[in-house]
Image 1 (cartoon, rainbow, N blue to C red):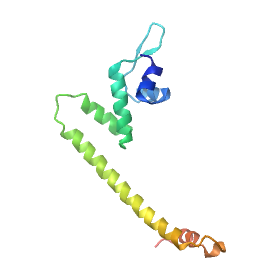
Image 2 (image 1 turned 30 degrees about the horizontal axis):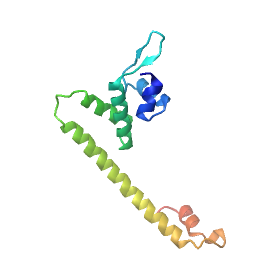
Image 3 (image 1 turned 180 degrees about the horizontal axis):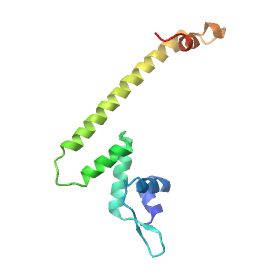
Image 4 (image 1 turned 30 degrees about the vertical axis):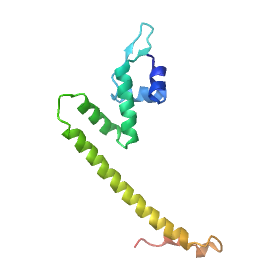
Amino acid sequence: MNIGQLARQAGVPIDTVRYYERQHLLPTAQRSAGGYRVFNDTDLTRLRFIRRAKALGFTLEEIGELLALSDQRGQDMAQVREAAVLKLQDIEQRVAELQRMHAALKQLVDACPGHGGLEQCPILGALTEPHR
């Protein structure tokens, strides 16, 4: 299949395929006699893997590590699980930080009447006061 077909079947833009190839997440494509990239079902499976891993929050570097582990089919799954556990912990920390930010911003929004002089605005006041 050509790059357009691959991209369409994987649900990504063509430029993304080229980028992943440059980043060595996808192997360098074979070339047709006319110089066009030629991909196969293995490339499609790998591209879908990358897309799904990105959707779960893995970085491209982490995805590269997962792909390297995936390529070692005879190995134990412990390293893959550990990578997923670390990503889950990272996501949990980010969720906690977002919840903290949500609570702080909600408190400011609730305190703001939405009318009156800016000098009385609790949101601007909180943003300009020295950090506690």
